[in-house]
Length: 191
Image (cartoon, rainbow, N blue to C red; front, side, top):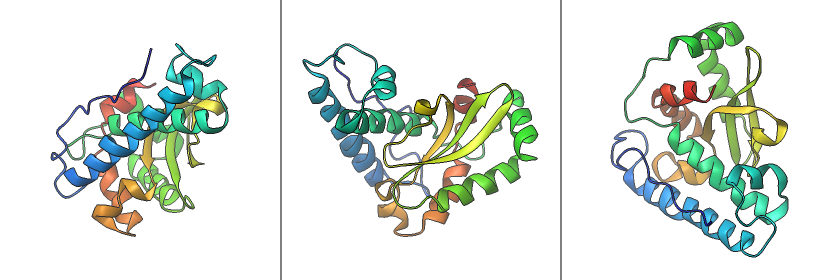
C-alpha cells in the first residue's frame, strides 16, 4: 500500500482574501506531495510497509516520523478549512468549548495567541484529552498530539510556507483569517 495525495474537498481558488490558489498549489501540491513521496520511499521494504499513516506516526522515529507526521498533519489541516466564513459550531462541540474556555470568542483569542506565539515552525492544535476536557497545544516541526495520546480536533499550520506568499510575516493576520474559515462540522466529527 502506498500513500497518495488526498484531493482537497474544495477548489483551490475558493478562499478569496484568505489563502490564494498559488499558496494551495505550493502547500498542497508540492509540500504535502513531497512528504507523501518521501514517506512512501522510507516505508518501502521496511517493517512499516502496509501500515496506516497513524500507525507509522505513533511508532516511528527520525525521518520516517517527520515525513509521515507532516503528511498526516497537512491532510488534517486541509480538512479543517472551509471556504464558508464563520460556520456555526455544532451544539455539542460549542458546549465543550464553552465549558473549557468560557466562550467561543475566548477560545479563539487563546488559540490565536498560542498560534502567533508558537516559536519557529509548527502547529497549533485544539485537542480532546479525554472526558469533557479540551486543550490548546503547540507542537514544533512535525509534532502531533497523537503521540501524547490526545485526539486532534483542529489545527492551524504555522510553518511559513502555509501563509508567506499571501501574508509575508503577518502570522497574526493569517491566524485571524484562518479562524474565520474553520470547518466546524469536521472539527466536531473528530470528537
